[in-house]
Length: 481
Image (cartoon, rainbow, N blue to C red):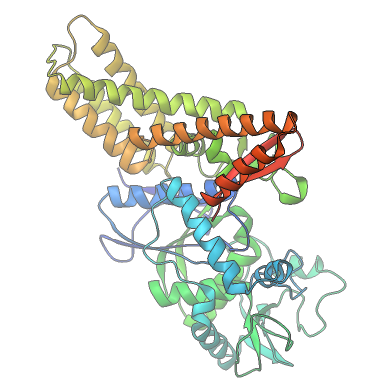
């Protein structure tokens, strides 16, 4: 069976055929590094990690590129001229690059903890200003852009296919444009390629149009071209980025390059918390660091992958507890099989048919637009057959057990990242228990007004790189990044 993926560009499942046989060029919109990553980031990047892992499992050589946005990311007000990194750096009174380094390290620390394999290349927007300036120059030269007082805009009316990714028509966009649209724009839907910066702006670079910095959409086009070529196979990202970000990427890239941009677009749906949209303004944002104090990395991955990547995922304690139980069942079955092999117990029950069915169902599910929910169901059925054989009076054949272990480690481990490292899990569990004991002891000391001893616990933990935060009714801890 061939691999079929849902292509946002065509709104249909299509057979995946890469440009170059055996090779896949893949790009994914990366994080804006001005804060710690939250569980919504986990949903996106675990899903993208699963796609890369499965492509490699299928034998493809994958070059996976994921950018780091450290400049040029606008706030929700697209015409405000504010840059999230610069704004946060000013608020914390640190250099923007210091802020970027802190949160870039924090992001990859979280991704490593969740077993998200690192991209082959993680380029930064600030390190690719020349490439972005060159793309702007090309767009001006070809008549797709215009300059007004140091600002360069893309003229959407020059792109007849503008809206083909999002399905939005240009006339609808113009009809719905705000009254207070930028007066320098020729058309309400035009977007900034290069933004002029005042002398006091922290992040700015010299350009043919004066000192400024690139628009948010430009970086992905420039860096994808730099590392994957003018046309490449897969572009991934969050569903919320289809418009305007991805749409603008397509328009400016195809205008500059004169050829198709990404051939397949894979978009991951959003995440809610208890049925509500997650957001810092709503007070329900869950940072990955906090989630990992309650749940294992494999449990979080199981939770994310138990639902199709194009479906909305709702975060609840019950759902995560069920995911922990599910991943525990799979790993327990694997451990029992490995123990039987180590003991040399050669039984009579055959697992050949169950193995073949599980492999076939797993690959059929993954080939059907990466249907991880059905793939996991196939693994559960294999685990049930395994447990039944081990519990029978005759036991399971040793050769079959070895095949089961290899299959679990490949499909549940290499592809889905659900196989636990027992020693790492034990260390993590021990850390959680020790912190619970120390926090409880500190609370008792404070209640007894023994503040010196309570402060000593906080100070010694801080010296070890662990911060305590007292909140109403609880104390939470995190490792300092």
